[in-house]
Image (cartoon, one colour):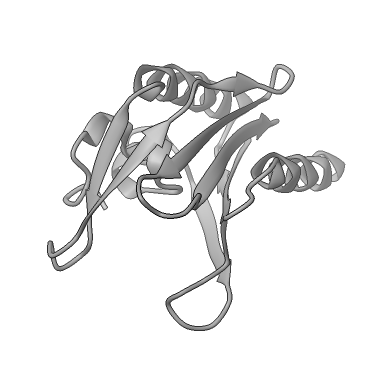
Length: 157
């Protein structure tokens, strides 16, 4: 998506598991999944990703770098063009929230969309980075809940 975002520095704040965001971080494996209702007009949209690193310090470094980058995008607007560059969508980012020492969240809302918003959450446990974006017309803390649950499961391994 880097070619459709007005501010490439905010790519990691608006999209999950983007290759340019993770490119030089040293990851060894990634799993990414999108879940939504059928069709193009969804009431709910969720992306969840798990990224494996060879060591915990590399995962923690990526987490801290992402937190800093997300904070730079806070309280700003980012434009996203559709793949055909016909329509443009403006996303307004809120400030980064910290849920403990290992999870951050950031909400964003799409302009002129009747309240369509997303909660993006990022967490780190051991040598794993977990990311989730949950979007709906009444988004709450679903992104954080997903990340917390995946982290809980990863810690058991």
